[in-house]
Amino acid sequence: MIWVFSEDSQGAPSTMSLELLAAARGLSDDISAVYVGPASDDSMAALGDHGAATVYHLDTGDQLPAAAAAAAIAELAAEHQPTVILFGLTFTDRDVAGRLSARMGLPVLSNVVSIDGASASNEILGGTLMVTTKIDSSGPALMVVRPKAFAAEPVGGPAPTIVAVPVPDVGHAGSATITARHAEDSSGPSLEEASVIVTGGRGLGAAEAFGMMDELAGLLGAAVGATRAVVDSGWVPYSLQVGQTGKTVKPSVYVACGVSGAMQHLVGMKDSGTIIAINKDPEAPIFGIADLGIVGDVHSVVPKLIEALKSR
Image 1 (cartoon, rainbow, N blue to C red):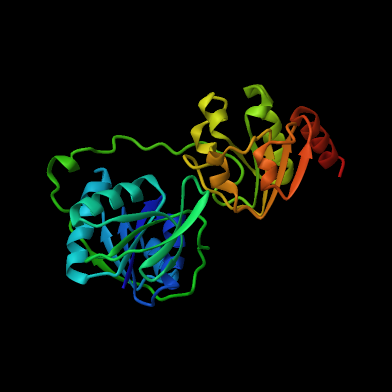
Image 2 (spheres, one colour):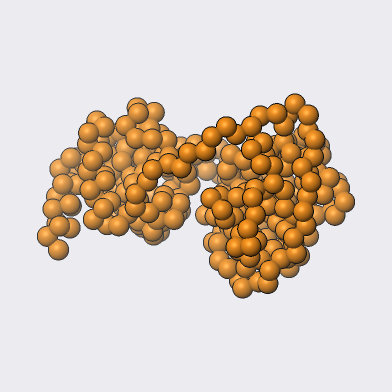
């Protein structure tokens, strides 16, 4: 019995949770989802379409969900005895997994990229090593899965059975509430869904130069990304950060402009289909994983590339 944690994201199951359901389908036909947030017929149908036969629904309203969700899952798991519970590498998922681990006295295996029963392969030391771990415990195996490790694909499953779960009283831990929600302004494809990504690094030199990334991305129908150094410098918002402490992406084409290739960044994009790197340092680590490399000043190469694309 495989359980998947799913959080509402703007009225639908998060993309990460649909990827988790794909991972679960490779392990069992007995799949359930624990869905946190307001539910609709469409969101429940989407979970069923991706393989969930049962959905345990918990709506915490304006209460921060992690404490209540962990308490509810612990009670449900004690009753139903799932073999594996899967979480995504998101803020809420990790919060719930950690609290559940403490409640149940179970270990959590993080950064998982493949699963075989109670065994899983995960990356350690910034993605430099891959290890296989077997979880041998008295309770369910708790695993936190990397984004894009599994493809979210519908399988045409029927509508699931919905089980309403009451919100447990977690005392002071449940006193934190959400006072406001803000949808971030964005244009073009999102980083998580884009098939082409253009990322700017510190080699751009200044925030003003980042406009080249927007222009190039517009011509390619691409999303714009950034390295941690660029985000820390305040050139662009955190939502554009690709890397270990940002977003993990897997586009068909990844264009790295002025990106040195620090391990923190490579972890978040190294599984891209075709990686194109532009950097004036021929020894830059980014060239070690690039399929195509241009050794040159990004301020000369990118304008020429933009010019060539416009001439088509």
